[in-house]
Image (cartoon, rainbow, N blue to C red; front, side, top):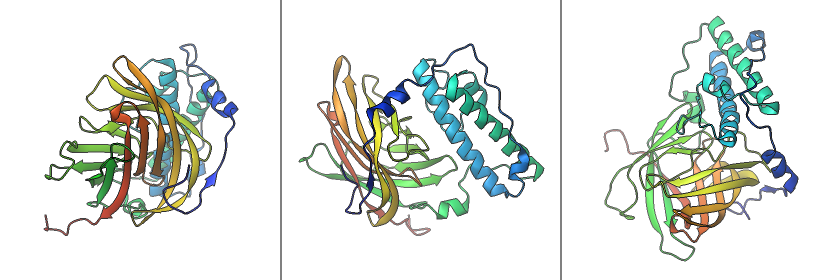
Length: 321
């Protein structure tokens, strides 16, 4: 397994005990209330408003990751799919987890409240929805640019190109758009994609692949994750996947420099009553969540795919259409 180009990445073989430890984490129960662990707003006295808002985003991302893991394991469905990173705190606390997850949510809730108090003391304006200019400038993509992908239905199949335009860069998500342009593949979905900062596709047009909660905000070398990949609009076709980060590091892809994570994927794909194995790999940029590569191998055609980011096209000049 290697990253998308010849630049070496760090590799690590993670013992199976790590995966077992994740699977045996504490279970949710209605017997415990999560009480926030107080954090002192004075800790943030030297922070400016931009830093306070950025840390607030990071705390909510981590809390959402913990809460989704608890909810999925317990099967409560308290957190509806598509809520994104800014999950409603009362919904997260209603999960009432135990053990390490209880302690983590309590700590994060306390830190979130302290950040809110510090921002109020500094008379910070509301953070707003759009990504601040400084954070936007640090990303390896810009508003209006087109991400051009090459898709192959199988290893030796014909290649087709399609593009997503960066329509909006927000604090917690990126919006992409694809309009009908008469170019192949003719059947490629058109419409709007939403991608969170971790790289999850939380919304997509019917017929497109999405993975709403497969990735977490803090994936480092050796980390494991799990989630579902689905064909939007098709209730009978989906894959249950597990992933492990097998490589990290800087990579040049499509002429741009990215800080990538490489995940090895494996699991089961299902179409109606038919179930078969699926495996592959996913490469994403840690700063933006942009998908750089997706390889899937399965007997179910929807999960037999090679997707590559092949180039990034500049935004059209103002007034140029």
